[in-house]
Length: 113
Image (cartoon, rainbow, N blue to C red; front, top):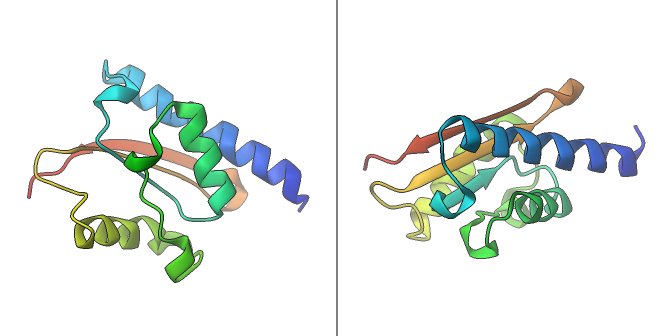
């Protein structure tokens, strides 16, 4: 795979689907308390957050600790957010991922605990 092309597709895909989920819910980026993206690559994470318009302090990053653990990156990042005290009751959390075959997905959730 060509790294630069993969980077562009990943950032474009994740940012488009993240904005789409917010739009469908009638929400704006300012409504998001935390963004927990797939932890594939720090440049992809930062570029996606920037493109969506999310503040750096709202982005959970733990790739430096665990690397790309594929399907486990988001659950691990959620635990990181909890451990850091950043994930709190009633927070609106945006999850987004891009993966093998360039599948992409995003969802919003309200943290209940």
